[in-house]
Length: 345
Image (cartoon, rainbow, N blue to C red; front, side, top):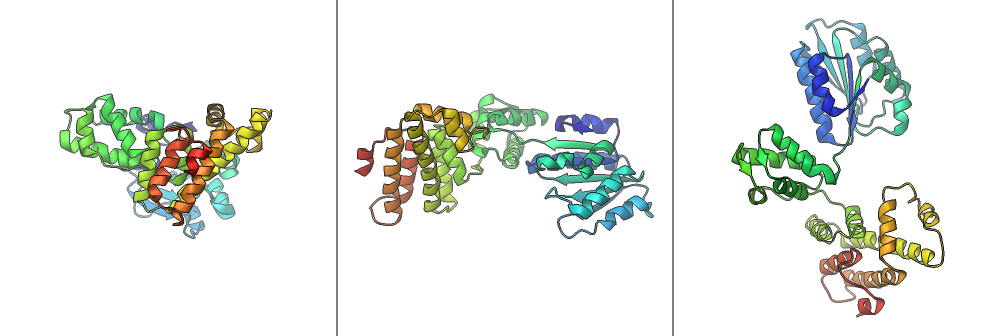
């Protein structure tokens, strides 16, 4: 039986299934769902807990042992199976399917794992666990909804914060849910249930954003100049190699330069996107917007500017490496008009 994460607590209050499978690519939310199952299990008398790591050479016969033998020392036990890869292998798949066919009365099985591949949902072992128990799929919180998620977490703790405070925490933590929760805990210790405004939040939060070079390319194409500045500064602080940052920006500029020239020559935009596997990609909408925004000459100018930045990185031209990267990133985001002549100066 499939249920949503927000339905889990109500389900657990009504009674427990013999098997729970919690999976998804947001570790904090997976951990919290598993914690809820463990707490409910303790309340139901599952006093013994056995942790099994399936990705560390697990002997799957040990799980079969639990299904064939009653506990000798406690009335009930919780088997906490960590399947981080989501791939039990042939031996594990067979044991899990057999276990689900006749789960023991004195044992509760909790399986936790990360994101599952699409074909896993139709595998025999997963369908067997779903039919005999409960599966909970955890989805990551997208950036647009993060302020609302933070506000809800604060309300659940009895805190009162204005929307600007929640938005500020979201901006500083940039999708890092664990960091967001830590900031909420910090504010709770500082202010308790007192009203919290943006100024108080700003004084307490810390920069916990998780950035990589691909975030930079996405922010630049989205035209988000402010985020480009923050990402470049974060990458610099983390010691990311400048050539890697330049490579990402050049790849984006070169790709859109080619696409814009194809469109200018009369090609169909759907064909152009499909050729680059953008047709069903989540970036397809963004690509259409960018291609309408900039003509081929602008992309050519950006590539000329990138060549100048490369020479600065190699020490062949004077200039600040990170300053040049920042200017290139903001130019890609539309902060200024770039022409080949201007870039060459």
